[in-house]
Image (cartoon, rainbow, N blue to C red; front, side, top):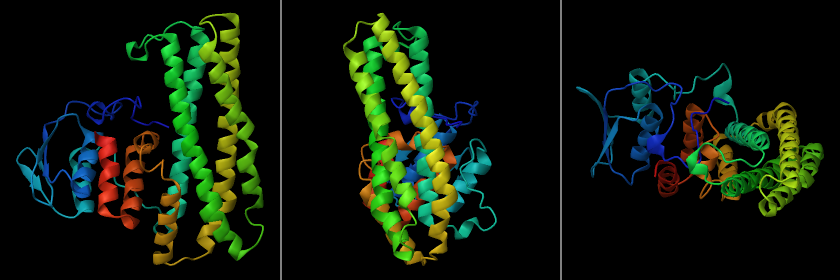
Amino acid sequence: MGNCFTSSKQSMAELAPCDFIKSTPAVQLYGDPTSSFTLYLHLALLYKTRALQFTPTNDPIPVVQFGPETVSGPREMMVRFIDVKLPQPPLMVVVEEGGETAALVVKMVAMQHRSVVWHLERMVWWSEDMVTRGGKKNGDPTMGSARMEVRKFGKSYSQLLEVMIEHAQMEERVLFPLLETAERGLCKAANEEHGRDLPIMNGIREDMKSIGVLDTGSNDYREALRNLSTRLKSLLDHSKEHFQEEERDVLPLMEALELGKDQQLRVLEQCIDVMQGTHSHLFSFFIEGLLPREAMQYLDLITRCKEEKLVASMLRRIIE
C-alpha cells in the first residue's frame, strides 16, 4: 500500500516519509501541547520531516515556522502551507468530482478496509519470511529470538483481529440496520460474509498457539508455519473480495439514503463509539495501515463528530 510506517513499535519521531524524506530544514512548531489543533499539526509535520522542533506554549493557536517564514491560522490553511513547503508525502486530499458529497461514513469504512488489507498483507509477508527462515532468527535485533518473534507476530495478529471484529460489529449494529430500514434484505449477503471467515481467523490463532510450544526449527514447527502462512493468505484474499463487494454493492446504498449532514454526523459518531478499541488503545496500530493523507483525512472525520478531549487523546497515542 506504500505506507510510510515501517514498524508498529516505532516511535513517531523515527517515522515515515521513509521513501520521501531527504534532508529538510529545521521546522519549528509552537503551541499548546494539550490542544488537538497543535497535536494535529505535530502529526502532520512528523509525516514530513525528522527535523521538527516543538516548543510548548500556552497559546491555543499553534504557529509553524520554516526558517524566516512564520504562519498561523485555520487548520486547512496551515496544512496547505506545510504541503507547499514540504510536498512529500502529500497530506491534503484532492476532492474528485462529486466526492465532496460522499457520505462521511462511506469514507470512514473505505479507509478502515484499506488499513485492514495493509496489515493483512504485512502479516502474509512476515509469515512467508518466517517460513523461508524455518526457525532461524530474524536479522533484525529488535525481533529477538525466533520464539520472541513468534510472540510479536501473535500480538500483531491479536491487534488486527480486534480491529476486524470491531469493524464487522460496527457494520452489523449501525450501517446494516440503517439500510434495512430502507429495504429489508439489502444486507443479507454482507451479513453472511462476516461469519464465513471466522473458522479461518480462529484457525490462525490456533496455529500460533501450536507454533509457540513446538521446538524451533523442527519439522513440525516448519509445517505449522506453512499452515499459518496459507491460512493468512486465504484470509487476505477473502477480505479483499469481501471489501470490494461491500464498496461496490453496499456502501453506494448509503449514498442513496440521502442523509442530511446532522444525520451523517450522528451515524459517524455511532460507528466510532462501537469501535472503541480501534479508536483508543489500537488507534496507533490502525493508523499505521493508512497513507499519511488518509490518516489525516480519517482524523478530520473524527474531529467533525467527537469532542476536543477525545481527539487530543487519540493524537497523543500516535505521537508519543
